[in-house]
Image (cartoon, rainbow, N blue to C red; front, side, top):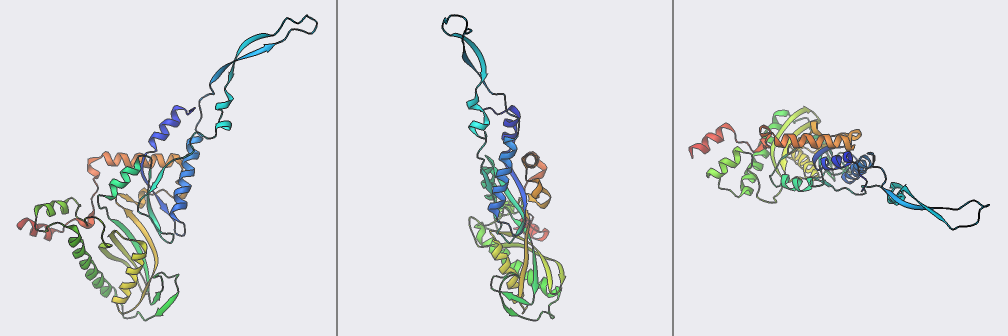
Length: 321
């Protein structure tokens, strides 16, 4: 390889985790492929080392007026053109970029990616039962076949009787149901010291795969027919979240359709860490991966799931038990 030392350093610094902002209407595969192409362009654009030199014997003939006395050979140093990039092609032709918890084409928000050995760290991250946060935008009065506002309308209803107080009560009821499901799938005795320690460190969660669990629900905007929810969840899909908005409408004796799903946090990665489209370059990715490694080494930035933190009342009860 003719890679310069700067190219090798950049390649080694490209191993780790980072996140980007996936816009709505774009498939996650297109995002990953675009970043792969940009990383390869950045690596191959760095200056290469000079071509290696080879020894070549050049023949020299005498003048035409002189009698032929054979060929005269002289050694010369010439570049080895077989090693030229125009002959061999780019030095870096493939780079492995992995994708974390995916977003469908109609959703937007934080999408975690991994490069090189970061793919193993990506698997380890999701084994720690990290939660994700979403912002859901809904609209009362309409029900569609795919639970989104772009689907085929199958029912219309009134919504004038819905107040924010009623919506908050429904959210509290649904959150309680999901908290019970979380404890059921945790496969840990809730009266044990182990359960308390896991809850304190944010490690309490379903043991293996389970149904989607919503660990936190909150209404942040209410202006009928429009409303906005903040959701913390585990094992979810974007289709399930749209269906959840539909079920809220049914609980309030009306209908509702989802107008947008945006992921605002995936484990330790937030919107503040996400690279937007014009930042999907090798230099910006290297910087983002470096920031992730620095936070990982800092003992004061441990990953905790706020949805799993026990309240003051539950902590006191557990200590008494």
